[in-house]
Image 1 (cartoon, rainbow, N blue to C red):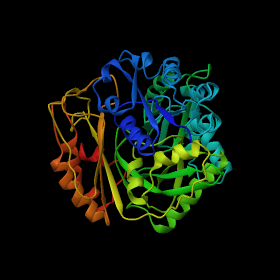
Image 2 (cartoon, rainbow, N blue to C red):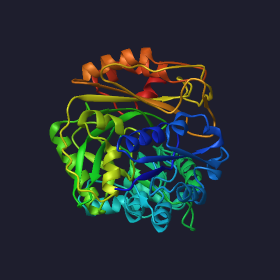
Image 3 (cartoon, rainbow, N blue to C red):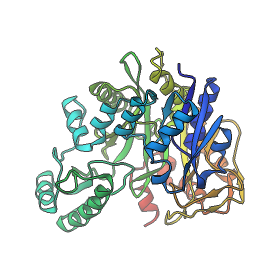
Image 4 (cartoon, rainbow, N blue to C red):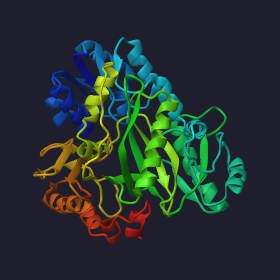
Length: 446
């Protein structure tokens, strides 16, 4: 096992990784921007190195500065968290080329699954169900119209690269397709094109679908195991807000098929480390299709940790070090995560600002992974996620009761926050019964 880890990230995920690194007796090195100098993760690390200005391109996304920080601190391994460099194959290669341990899957696995079109083609060969869609990049509207006619409306239009729901749109006819294609093309331009126009993927859109993902671990000996599923159907603008496990919307038989398919997906690319196979479940809850694979630690990983008792960051570290691990996949109880954002709870627009009051809930079955504290400031330079409020219960009903108490007890004053939305969601009949889909938030705001 290496002795020191540089955490190439910020906020709550950097703080969460540092916690496990230090618990394992290893040395944690943080990197930070000028805007983040007062955040808890900087103070809690064994060493913290300033990268540069707030602009991510001049700090967290400057590969040269991150690698220089690793060299200067004597770090032996790099953990990218999620976002930033976490799914960047070239950065992973640079880390390895510098003689450091990359805590993540191989650059080849990242590349194979990073392109959504290539990934769905690979999954189809591996026997993982995929929706009807394009097998090659669609580079202009005319080709998109032809493809949609063959697939059948409605279609989902999205970039072949990138993630987080950015640029995604649904088209029900040609007029809507042109608009959705333009939105996706703009997003594709930010991720880098293929030299022949934007690389866009079209797939058959599944109406009233549930978004369910499977957590996998690719162990050092080549074994791939599935650690249950998470329901991520509570979304605004195709971005997740609340996640829970087990999913209340799938049968045991469907669950087993999804877990088996996720293992096949990992085996198909020789996966190592923590990864997530994301799927869409149809309205009848009888079948599913592959959506994408995230080759990193997910924001929502704490709910899996709560029901399995497995520290996924520890597993990432041990797998990267080549240690043999014995991972049991037993799931016990029910867990729910609420992403606490600095945003308007009605329209979900970011609302940064100084935090005047910050009081976290606590008690049995409550876990808070936070990136901020009283007196710190949520700046406009990064994602507005402030914390993740997680609850655990032996049953979903118990978890919901604890969630209501924890949301009511969480006090944040200063920046706007979405805790009122979380409270509203907990009283929504669809969510309360577990019979909801990805359109839930849109219906709540219609």
